[in-house]
Length: 580
Image (tube, rainbow, N blue to C red; front, side, top):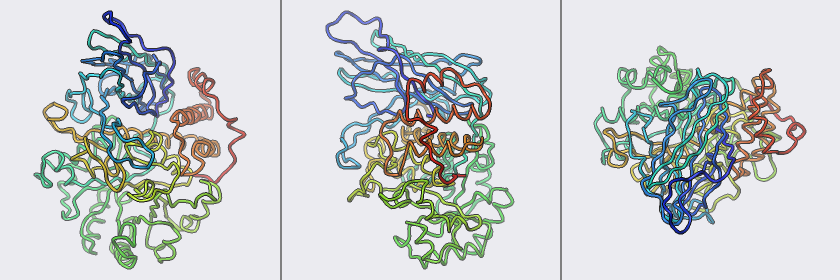
């Protein structure tokens, strides 16, 4: 998860239960790669084992089952993890997982009903207020779950840390033991894989005020809070102003400047936005002024100009060509980005000299079923990527679930609520294999105002909505804040997986990193549903990195891989094109 969670032991200890007929409530530990639904049977893990670099987030869950008579008034706490140092306070966050009613499945054959996704924190990570995660009631014969985030501070000494999640309520007590092995590497705060995820401010206003328009002060505060939470999940919310707004540089410097420059107070010290989307008027004067202002502030190389989106739908290729040429002439240093079905189409339309970053939806990366990621299929991009300063980005869209029509078949990356956890963690592994340098997503707040009850959009439940509105009426406290979804947490795990893949490659064994990625996801339509495969792959990367650096491999890492055997790794991985 970058938390690899190794669940061992027997049913979590439950004490203090009054003498009653039937089975009592129980708690158990499990990894981040499962979804606990009401019908999920109780588990039997009393301990979780985590592995992490310094400055990495790791996550796990605590399952709760009501037994035969229910479990009322449940609360939980994780006070600290202690070892060579102490991890505590804001680096440990407990959440109550909320169930979202999925009435229309994203794909045929998927069960409708209650799915876990929204996360209500015990203490929120935006302003640090106590919220209404606890107490919660677990009905008889049903399961619920808690989500736990652990951020390993940058200065935490490597070694083994231990603690426990204590669960109490209704006269019952349970404990899940937590062991964390911190390895000697510092994960960078700013993601190596760039991102541009859009957020529409009227959606924020509607969710928190009930109106599409809110005061400028409220709009800025909400946008800043969302941007902060995005960066702490290693993604950049790149929209800085609404399309109708004229750039106000004093406002930008006050509200956005710290995030662009890496000066904002975050748990990821120095984390910076990896992109800033230009949303001003598409005129030569406005583009040139933007270039002057961004250049003076030192972040013009991260700025993006979008001359169009998915032509010919909504905009013609002629219009894209004209806008891209205008952008080139007005400010040639401003990187142009276009979402398009394929690089071949880019060539056919004469756009290769005008577009710097071609963004291709994952479903069109390769032709099914002849081509494999990282093998011969990469040749489709060599002509474009061979040009000076050209990049390939990827994105997932409603096409993977059919956009309300026929789905393409296969198990693709997906951000839908009712898809396996692995679907939301997969895209970064594919990005590494194809040499993509960034990922895009069209919207993160599409259905924000109704996120607790309905996120159905473009035929998928959760399409375009990765956050929840933490209004005071919903979660308590005195200030409304954005809340993360489980899918946002899983995307962060994928972003951190990318860092491990890159670290192994940078340390001298790119072939090993590519082999691990290809073994896990042979093609974009073969994302495994077994989350444990992601965990094993990540630990293989940790082990290989430590070995390359001449560092001792902790016994806990060796023991995990011994308990989770896989294919003969070194023999399996055949050399493929480098992802660097």
